[in-house]
Image (cartoon, rainbow, N blue to C red; front, side, top):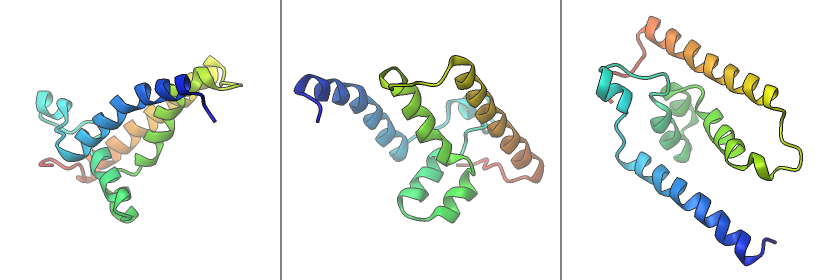
Length: 120
């Protein structure tokens, strides 16, 4: 059980993230789409998480098939300094590169088959 100081530190670290996530779930418009007029490689992530929170995983995967990677990656990056045995920098870099490549591959596939959401 964490002591009071550790608990306050955890709340201080996670409260802003929680507030941002709630904002994203309520009223988020993609800045990439606003600037360039086309969806970004991550477009659909918020809608996918909304669907997953409702238990509709089929819709979640339809909105963005890689939505499930976002949480673990963010949590690892936020807490890696506290881990007893964090990954080596080269391993972290390789994993992040693979995730980025996966997002780009999904983006290209969705662009080529016309399933990028233009109006959402």
